Image 1 (cartoon, rainbow, N blue to C red):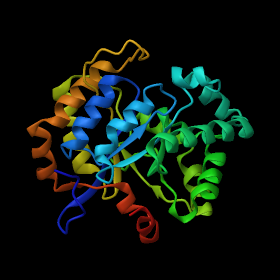
Image 2 (image 1 turned 90 degrees about the horizontal axis):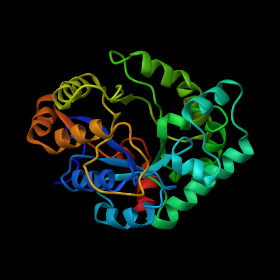
Image 3 (image 1 turned 180 degrees about the vertical axis):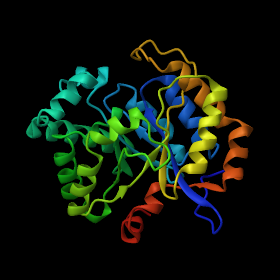
Length: 289
């Protein structure tokens, strides 16, 4: 089973699993869901020491899902790389005028290089761990690099701005960190964007509550929206950083792999589609085939 192509009566959505390569259990869950056709995209944390082996393990899904860069400033991997900081510090720095752009450009370029070195292709898209792709001082060199490095064949960008009817305090804070500014900069540079992001919640509740949320997201999200998820399965990984949302990852994985999720897709008339088929030009796709 593969993610469906847009059908006449189906609403196309991109279902993207974040945090690939953060840990063994997260990568294994994403591999399983991608193989079953329950995802159409994933975003990789390339600063993780797992990235080379996990990139190799994902090769079986090449061409079936989009594989993108999960730009990282706030994880232990980013701190180990020398440019990272806590989310609160990154937000304050962005609100105070932005990160230093030369240093930000170097960190972004390093992550693009790491992605390409092990995936052997450009990323299909770029988003951000904890939405840092929108932060002042990061968004400007990011768009500049994507335009210079890839031109018209470049990755699509995620805008972390939820659609109407799904806003809450968390989503409003996320969008306020620069969704509109990133959209304007990208449009001026000719970089494609996915305009809406669904799936924002506080990782509270249980599997049943997640199932109810998923039904609402599928129903309320407009066509061509990105719906993010964070699945993970229990697996030993002594090298992985502590994961405060481990419980939520497990119930997301259980729901997405189950028959109830398949029923929800059918009931909502949703087709899971690669963002590169929705947001990028025919000329770019021709170069990638």
